[in-house]
Amino acid sequence: MSNNLVNTIVKIFSWGIMGASVIIALVFFLRISNAEADEHIGIASSYILWAVVLLGLAALLSVLFPLVQFILNPKNAVKALVGLATLGLVFLVAYFMADTTPIVSAVENADFSNPAVLRFADTGILATYILFGFAMLALVYTGVRGLFKF
Image (cartoon, rainbow, N blue to C red; front, side, top):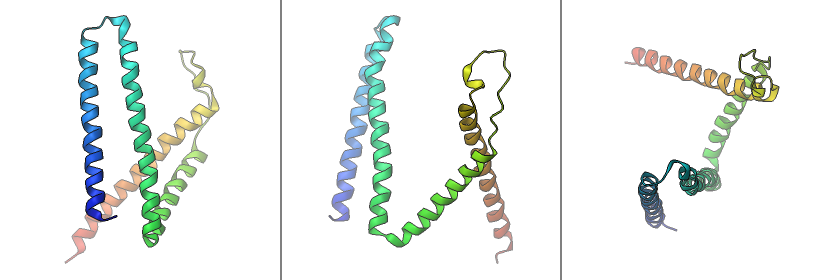
């Protein structure tokens, strides 16, 4: 398949999904503006389903396109796999650093004392901090490197 044909197919597909989403959004706002408060959940459920379909499609395509790229260009696949392994290492370090001590709270929420939930939340927060630190170091590095180049 030529590049022009692929680009045309992707453009048509993208415009089709965008057009359908705009029409669905307009129908949603027209329906919900005339509805009673107790009907809002029923009206919104079909549009939430559309959002889930779009999310699933995005997830499928975000896995499918890199796989195709790995097959077509295996030399660049090594770079991507190193980046993915580094990201996995960051999350592994964050997982082992995560604290599962129950949170004492005035609200009696079972999730505040569930070790699995606490470890999951802590892992996400710590991984975000680590990745933010890497981003700041890269920013400082590129700024300092630019000062010493002639």
